Image (cartoon, rainbow, N blue to C red; front, side):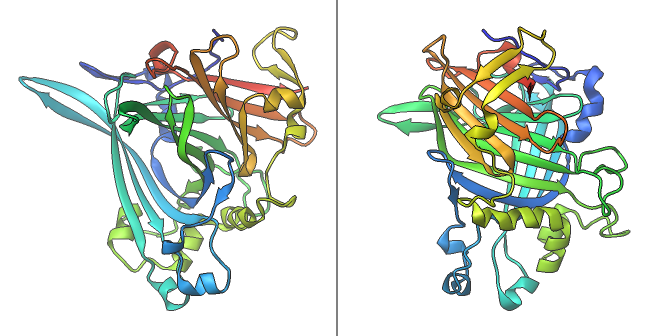
Length: 377
């Protein structure tokens, strides 16, 4: 079995009592917050972009051949400690609550009063068992923060059997480089990174397959001071209050993310922004934290193509396949390749999950994914 490389993680147990590792409470700021951004949908078979479904697109957009490649959204994440009554015993639990407002495309006067699809999802954080609705959150890394959020979804009925299904989400926190509009390096007063990529999809571990679609989101926290003293203008206030308009949404999302979203239309062209290829990966990689010789891995194009590999916008890479040394283990790997380091070496930040294909459980201590960082020599 491969070793697990990690520096810090946040782990919540909810069997008889909840506990937070007190050595990592400074990382809790990466879990909650309110975000605005865009998300695109990609095929789980090819990784290709799937445009916004027709029934969400106004007739005028179809007529002008302007079908969007993405949805805009507002989102809030929150940890909720609470008490749960079990017969005569009271247990403390911690839930992870996410509220998402997906904004529907509109033209003309409709931009002044946008329609939204609102969804609230609450997950009890706890042990990595098969109980539906239970999930786990981990945070890894020092400079490059990674958050993983895995939960048990309803099983999928297929061929007279119920297949275990899990929702896995990998979040990469990305600092924004200094420029004229961003002198503080992309961090707010609390030091929270201002952009994050979220990669989410369902898996069928006993089948060794990614199920349905892949969702790729780029988002950042609401800009400080946008609403002045009106603190009620949070995600819930914006959605429930009605009258959400295009200008407010664009301001929340910001120019950088909207420029990224426009580039999604060029997915099959060379000018697609932030999309790597196999040729960018071929060469020698070394895991940080290992000795010079032990950590080296020489790779060819055939090595990278040996398993199912998706290249997504924003330098996001998804790989999945049966483990080389054990036919009963299926692995799925989500990584972000940082090629913007100029004179420094390209760096790949990796989260790898390994599952037992008989039981569908993750193979690791306490359900912790494997995390490591490697540089291209």
